[in-house]
Image (cartoon, rainbow, N blue to C red):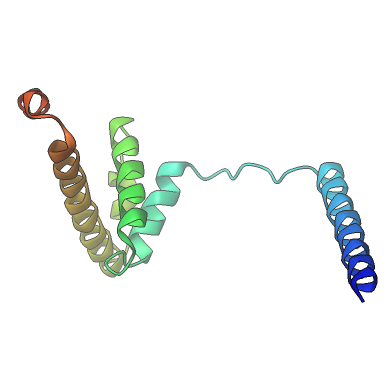
Amino acid sequence: MVRFRNAVTLTCFVAFSIVASLAALRTLRAGLPETPSTTGAAMLLGHLSEIDLSGEPRLAKRHMARRAMRELRDDVDWQPDVSQLSSAQQKQLVDNLTELAQEVIEDKMDHYFTLPERERRRFLN
């Protein structure tokens, strides 16, 4: 019985290895998909204007907040794209940016309280 179980396990392992190798070869031959022409800022704006982030997990919101902060630091001008959104999408965008701003503030507060006492004053400056 043990020999049979070992033989079946080995057969399954070999079969899965072959399938995985064939899939890898197919991917290598086909190549990776092309980079989308839409910029990261446009994708982020589209996402923030269509999806409600209020129920999302905290880690997801903090990730989105870091992405939004990075785009804003890169001097991305969202105004032309925002003006093309419907009023419902603009409201969703404002609601989501409010959520993300709260996450940024809470993230900074969490970081502040992890610092030693002598570095907290420097952090505030």
